Image (tube, rainbow, N blue to C red; front, side, top):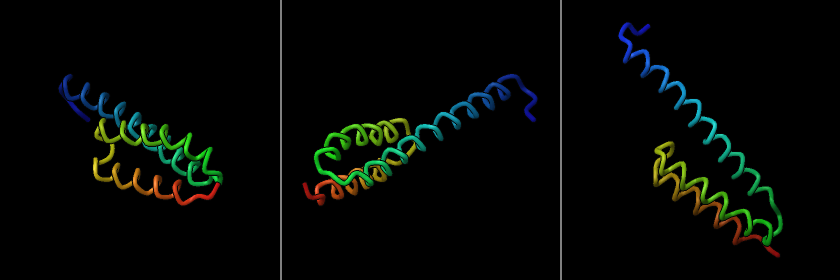
Length: 85
């Protein structure tokens, strides 16, 4: 265990950040999963902007890499556009 007060504070902060990042990551993964299960193009088109925004926020916060965010957005966009009415 840490001995210095600043190190103890850093441990507390990093634990809090880790928990928050895991929550945002899991929430986004669930949103992507839900988007992939939508079978109508209209509903998926409405939901895609919300999911893309979530992915962008993860990249901005440094939770995922910007290239991973671009790949995820590309895949969901391709999936939505391949849907039939």
